[in-house]
Each structure stands twice: as C-alpha cells, then as structure tokens.
Length: 474
Image (cartoon, rainbow, N blue to C red; front, side):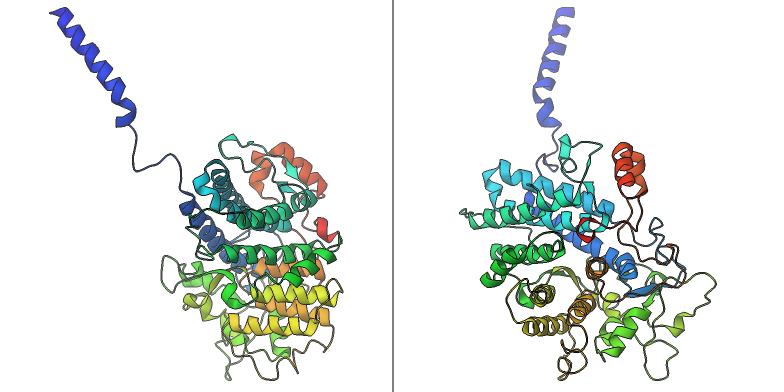
C-alpha cells in the first residue's frame, strides 16, 4: 500500500512540474511589449507632461506668466520646484521606454519600421534634456535590464556631436525610413498617423533647430543651406508635429483636471504684457483674459518673482486664457511646427548662414503662428507694428518665435539664453542675485542615487550652479 501511495505522489509531482510553466504564465501579460503601444505611450506621456511642465515652470522662466503664490521657483530658486520644475524624470522615463522600441526594431525584422521614429524621438528628447541641464547621463543611461545603475555624465558637446548623439540619430533615423521597404505600417503614431514622410520632415526641422542651437560653436552654414534647398521640412501647419488635447478627461490639458486654484495661480507676466501691447497684438485675447477689476476689458501683467509682502490681488491681473483650462480641445501638445521652423530659417538668413529672403521667411512664420493660435492676422500687422525692419530684425524674429511658443515655455527660455531675446526683466524679489538662470540644476535625487558621478558634474558647474552656461552658450 505504501508503494502504491508513493507512485501516486510521484506521478502527481511529475504532472505538476510538466505543466507548471504553462499554468503559471499569465497570457494577459505578454513578456514582449508591442512597440506600437510603447510608441503611443512615449509620444503621449512626453508631450502631455512637458506641456504641463512648460506651462507651470517653463512659462515662469521664460516670463510668459507670473505665479501669485510667492513661488520660490518663480523667484529663481530652481531647486524648489512646486507645481512644476523637475522635468528630469519625464526625460529619463520616456528615453528608457523609447530605447526599448529602438532595441526591438533592431532585434525583430517585423518591427523595423519603428527604427526611424525611435531614433528621431531619442534625438528630440535628448536635446531637450541636455539643453536644460548641460552635461547629463546619456551613453550609459538607457540600457533597460542591462543599464548601469550609476551612469556617467556625458558632455553636452558629445551628446550633440558624437556617434549615437543628437545629429547622428537624426541622420540615421531619416536613413532608416528612406531604406525601409517592408509592408508593415507604423502603428501607435499619434503625431503623423503612420506617415513616414511626416517623420522625415520632423527630423529635418529638428536638424534646423539644433544646427542653429550650436551655431555659435560650429560652422553649420552648408548643412543648413542643404536642408533649406531641399525644402523637405515642416512647411505648413498641416504638417506640424503635434497631437491634440480634448475638452474633457482623460486627454484634456492637465490644468483642466486640477483644482481651479492651481490654474488661478498663474497670471500674465509684465514682460509678455508689454511686448504684446507694444505690438498691438490680438493674440493677447487668446492667451490671456481681461483682469476682473478692469472696467474696459483691459489686460494687466505682473512682474515675475513677487515675495510674500507684495500683497497682490488676483482681480488686478489677467489670468491665462480659457484655451488652457475650459477649452483645451483647441490646444496641442507641440513638438515642432512650421512657425518655429520658419523663424529659425529667418534667423539663419538674417545671420548670413543661408541664402534666402529673410523677410519672406519671417512673414511666413508670423502668419503660421497666428493660424496656429487661431487668431486673425491684422492686415497691417506685418507692415506696421511687427514689420521685420522696425528696430532690430534679429530681435523681432526671436521675439515672434517666443510669443508663438507660449505652450513651450522652456523653449522660450532656452532661446533667450542663446540669443538674449526677448529682453527679459530683472524679477521682483530674486533669490539668485538678480541674475536670470541659464541652466536647470540637477535634481536632489541624483545626489542621493548617483553620488560619485553627480559630484563630478556638480563640480564642473560650480556646485550645480544655475548661472553656469551650457556648452553651446559658452
């Protein structure tokens, strides 16, 4: 009897062992992620989060808006983020997810179509990261399961210029798309709905942008002229690299989902108020609201960086426009646009880097910016108040680009650092010795989690100072 019992137990064990892997595999949790789902996630998460960051923190640095809650970040204590001001984890999470797409595209021929877009997105996000912070973990930072826990900080110059860097990935991304001969379509693409030609135009517009960004360091004229001559960049608003928010949840702009007090914390900045008023620019009614105490529907801006003794009243200043809260279906997550592309080309022409008609490029940029913000362009705007030839043409180009980038406040701040335009103001109660910051500080978690490499990077920036220029700005 004992022998029979032992045989039954043995058979039971063998049977369970044989089927164990099959029984304990969750068929609803696949081991390999689909690149289409991940591409959609990367584009949406990065676009949604950085639009919010650009509004809550970038707009303060770029002086599009002012915070009423005695915001330390608005007073340029950038190590004290509040509603926004720490984009570091947004970059790294999405760069890691994007690296998975890139790896899948190279490991599985069924996913080859994803290589080009993944390389272009990597270039785009990496440039955004290093333009804010300078030297950052890059070459060792996105390796998935084999990643280095404490990655070294790569120099900004190498991130832009070396193999595997920004320009290299843009070139390789374009080439991967041009060489793609498969029949599998690109799915999960909420920027261009699977149109690979749209990704090439996006990449070429990004090349224009980043060539101009490093133009004080290297000779970019021939490369810019080639792209300008070929004309295969984002040239109309219909070709923009954007996706639309909705009026209702879950895909509305995040400020529409938060309590009204968070939205009402932001008002028109004095800098933007003066610029739009001097230009008689009707976009003020799209981007801002008349202040409550106005008897004539007027607008009023507040100087950035107030302190607790200011005693300001919300009713005396203009809130941000309803497009950012009540009507977010009119708002886009903006990656790259025709207006920005044309302003960059206008700048290149003005500086003699390309042979083209500066005024035509500038006027096209302004026209497309008004179309983008859905505001009618006044008949005399480009011949009177905003004419290229009134004042400094370069300042006019950059100022118009700054206005147009109201959803991308970090971009406005970056371009101010690069060009000095528009002329931002010394803030009210500065915590940075009346200096406008020229880089973001590394976040506190880096000091805790990657201390040795952080310490070296901190030493290279005079103790993680926000007043040390990045490579292309030196």
